[in-house]
Length: 276
Ligand SMILES: Nc1ncnc2c1ncn2[C@@H]1O[C@H](COP(=O)(O)OP(=O)(O)O)[C@@H](O)[C@H]1O
Ligand SMILES: Cc1ncsc1CCOP(=O)(O)O
Ligand SMILES: [Mg+2]
Image (cartoon, rainbow, N blue to C red; front, side):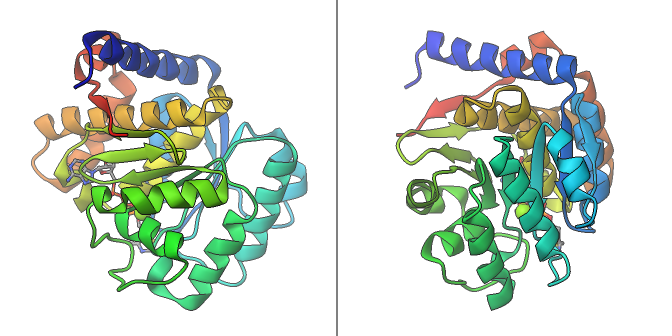
């Protein structure tokens, strides 16, 4: 059971992180899938960050040195896109810029799984997947695939997440009913969010982009920054659902709620526990 003071510490940490993102407006480069580009960019803008969907390999040497964080998502991967992803990841890692890797639909093909493992070799700061994606990556073998959706609960993936964190050196975040964040030793559960978020495509991708923005302003504490981003996104979903009639209006209200989040709401809604 979490003590009141531990809860208060998490809540004030979440609010401090969001305030800092709004104040510093970090530049986040996103090489993401076609489905998600719009929602990822709008999520980052409503949180106060500055998104740039720059993915051409010829632009990376000029642009990537200027970013504050990077997000790479393989949701619509093709062989033509992989060199851009690798080049951007290499620049980010060499220059000490935090980067998030989202192995969207990793089990779709052998090509995608191999590409994901190669990208993990380039040292992401955070790997964010759903339960099925993290289990597949951790065992380096595709399970049964449901494409971009998960057929596992996030809590089924705790041991896989810990093992992937230890083998990769990344913080691993598993989205789902309870968002799990681990560095291989500590395991934190974020209990914000709402089930209907699964019915909007690219919410997982947007969460990965948001994690990148939070890492940009607290790169020395990737576990805490990731926990904060997950809680903030979940709270925006909870508030959005209260105004929505279904997934399409939730999409709109989620963005509005993220934009309008205030201190009282954040402090009263953060729900984070230590799971191990
Ligand atoms: N059953 C649920 N209850 C509450 N929040 C959920 C639930 N399922 C997903 N979410 C939230 O939806 C967002 C996207 O997560 P998820 O659907 O797991 O990603 P992905 O799209 O990558 O599979 C996250 O913020 C997560 O917390
Ligand atoms: C439907 C789909 N197909 C390939 S990528 C993609 C979007 C997946 O987004 P998310 O992982 O956030 O559900
Ligand atoms: Mg996903």
